[in-house]
Image (cartoon, rainbow, N blue to C red):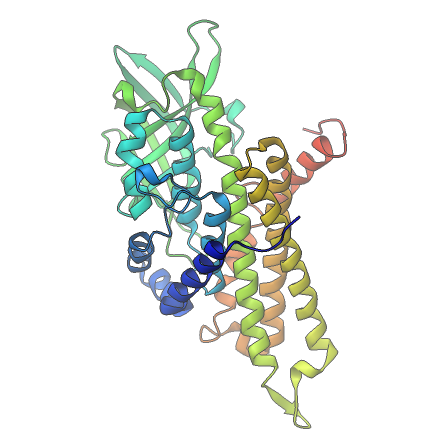
Length: 387
């Protein structure tokens, strides 16, 4: 058992941290408040190779795994720049296309995902079905050699920044007549695809959208994979990377909040010349939050290691646990930091309260803490399915 990063991973962590500090949380907040996007940071990260660390070298990537991408997600978040589209585009879309796309799809999309010139977002969640793919109402039907997609999707991140959206639909299996999941790479400017921005109480430069698909016509090669049989494996291929990188982003955010609060409490003096951090009522909550963040980081490392080793079942369990632990730890860390900073914690200047909405959402999405507990109860504890 080895908890040390490789020299290459250490170098990656240090380099990404330096890039994140170059931009910082004030950059992130300014973009979010102005309605802008973090394009400068994204493109520099792509040029330096950080967006494609998990993409094979033959497609322009770094040849690493989800372990390396999790490092990128965590370190950018630890500098106050938690980029949600790192989860959506390199982790989910790139993994699905690499593992289950056709060779033509790999050649067309992976180089752009690696260098940051292309973004592909992900659309599974629906207004009525949530992310339960058994109940998805978005359907794809054949029309000659083409496909026609119709349905609705909700809480779809970054559609306004992406050239394509990876849509999860259901289509009829000709051999059985049953509906089965299928994934389609859909241009975001396709006729029949409309988007409506959702107003969210989260300070983020990445927007959320409701999508309407009204007989969106797609060529046959828009289907991910060689046949409909690729649909279910492709869908599951994106879930573990999603959970692991979301967890990494949460752990980084928790580290950022604790660091901001610790810097303040170690120098702030109001009673008798002693720093407020010398009082256990201030120090203990921060220390407790730091412990929870570090525990989450250990589970993230385990989940990423299992995933990169091809141990998908074990990675699924650890990935869900990591996402749960990091979601709880990040929310605790940010809330504790705000409390330790007092009134300063609610100001934009100190850059902590600006993250309250995001870490609260991290306990809900992309899978809620309750559904993770259901998963653990069933698959780890052997309990009957409760839903």
